[in-house]
Length: 504
Ligand SMILES: [Ca+2]
Ligand SMILES: [Ca+2]
Image 1 (spheres, rainbow, N blue to C red):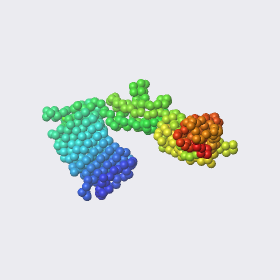
Image 2: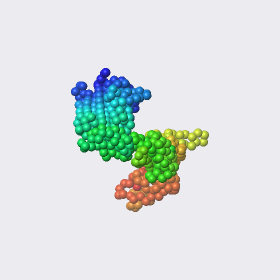
Image 3: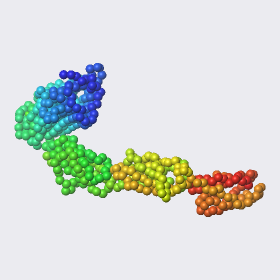
Image 4: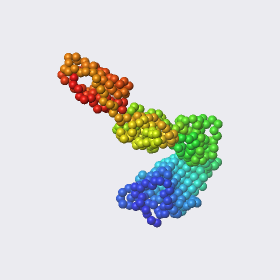
């Protein structure tokens, strides 16, 4: 025997298949501080022959499996888990412990402490499934205790409580070695509606007697009545492999239930016309074909005919996303141009679209790739630094490769176009005579300009952008000197050189 205590301090076992534990594993505070082992959901611990997991401090076993390391396991392949009274925090939640109990031991042997054992499966132990000693008073609920030599064996004067559990297929169900100190075990399923077999008539002493019980056997000192006439539905749950959204109506349902015999699936909560089928852990299912939010209902049923129902939901989206808007829409001048694309729906922001702007040419078109990223789930922004040498033209924006949340890829799309104009307008002309000095406060200024340009006088747009080639403006003079800076501005925002400074 060898202790691996030093490796187990404050350790978490995660992942799948821990491999084989070849030696006894002791969780104990040899060096003066608390040793904690967490066995996380999904971990499989395979115990080598005669291995025992000894808990003197703290064990948090979640939905993990602790089982035989043999490919063809059988009861008694390993010893089991021994929890000593020194243990502080111990819990088993959804844990499966199987094929332990070698040497007439127990899969789970607890002395003097009272861990919560909820939703656990204790199966196929050669000896006891659970052994309770020295006042151990665990609460065992929603458990499956099956295929063991003895399901639960209690000695001492503890007050364990067993409820809503499935106790079948054990050579002996629940044995109380100290019947003078009864154990509370009502509302459990013992394998038959007739209840557990209690062949010992101790009714004279206040005990129970159920010689006709076809379920697992119980000893005196077990308060098993009332028992459950129905198999409890334990661990019933399901998930949809595809998650919250899918691009295809064909989905995969993953089912789990420890005690169910049958199930059925439907988008109809009344399951009209849907038959129960034999329980299986994975099943393909076809959603109704129209896009939208689908509610999926699963009903679990046991062999006693009771059922329970759960639902989940998934969005079916078979529609490819598109770009619905693009900016800029007006002409742009040289500089960093920000291109904004608006998509028809929330997008998968882990995927970047390929965005190019293309200048058509007689022989060869020129393309620039826009780099950018998602601004939010529906908006993508990128930029490119355009110069006069980029080439003035109408640029076509092409977008491809973006995907929606269901991973539908967009079709290659021409999202729109914009004009790059890096050429300033010609300097406007001023043909009206300006008399200076003057006593006329409003001077009408007129002249010629390039079509599609505005006239800016002293940094204020005085004449809006029009196709006209003449302009006129009544300029209000201030008292004193009125220097006039006049230039033209085109639609892209390019400014002409100003007219030579005038004074009025
Ligand atoms: Ca009895
Ligand atoms: Ca879509």
